[in-house]
Length: 173
Image 1: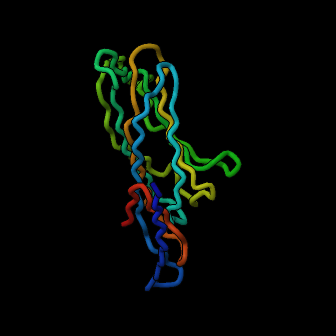
Image 2: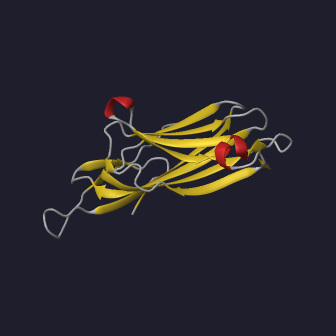
Image 3: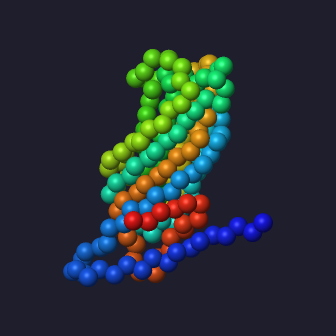
């Protein structure tokens, strides 16, 4: 089966002063359905040409669940972080949540949350186009699964003729 990739050419026209730049919001959902190993971690990576020149806001939606009702994940064990870029281009990283430090070890069958990551990623869009979500289970007992995550980025649009990869459910506003 051939996989069709949709590449959208973004053409931006600014009718105001030459210094102004068009604002853009793009989002992408990643379906993972992968277990986070007990006392281990799982990293989901997204390579994404988003047509963004600089970032002013990042929002992340996460969906975690327990693949086994008889052995549910323990919220008190869970940790997540989001990274943009790679080390050689001075990647930017922020903690999404750290339940190990803040919550009791209560069992749960799901965790869905929206996280406004504020200005943690403000600045230029990095050349690697790489976003990595790390979800970790830091203590024995219970198994969690990363079901999906959605990344929404707001910022200034790249110039005319830049490309944007909208395969796998990307959205532009």
